[in-house]
Image (tube, rainbow, N blue to C red; front, side, top):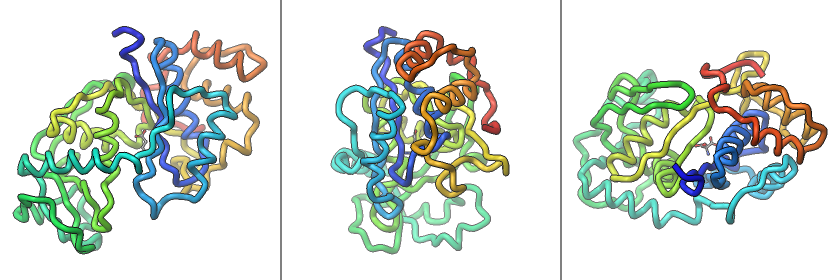
Length: 290
Ligand code: GLU
């Protein structure tokens, strides 16, 4: 692979401030891309307005700049790409793998994976939104891929994953569909938290069904708080904006298993980090305490 072929990305959802867990995903994807001379894009996954925090789309780039990240090109917004998602939805429809699902959340309680209840409601054209039913895609094959950090992964239909929602009941495209379409659109490497590993199986299957290019994946361990919970907005993770930049960068670097750096400024941190980065040093566990 030449450096021009390496395209990494960081794809936060604008649901809150960036926290230490987000910094880890940003750092790992950035260092891996830059250390191979590749490009690094920022995509804001703003496809879910009900979950969005007003002003997060302004705050996120600001935090990235404060931490010294330099992305290539313009920031991509999923909200500007709905036509593309619609085209891919049509393409799934033509493949006869979409069905209308009327199951309520309550009916699905207790099922780790979708039990296939509505599979017989196959659609031949995209139905008008009715606020009552979601559109699901039939997941009809197992998926296997090699994760650069976590090793070989396999997802068995029914056991690890099931038919997935592509258009939600509230008529919004699902994260799984949008992310699959976007990552297959010129991204060569997806480096992100291991909490997203199960979704990767679904996304790879969607890419296969759509005949798209499948990127290389690497899933880093997610950071846990002292109560062993994943850092997130729900677990009230502190915003990185409230932390001192260089010590926080060094803490993230250490979390990612990298060799100690002796640096005294943010600029020299990135210079040294990009030169010293080794993906092979990232711990191959799915989570660890921060
Ligand atoms: N936007 C999603 C999130 O922040 C997905 C991230 C990703 O795929 O890297 O959880």
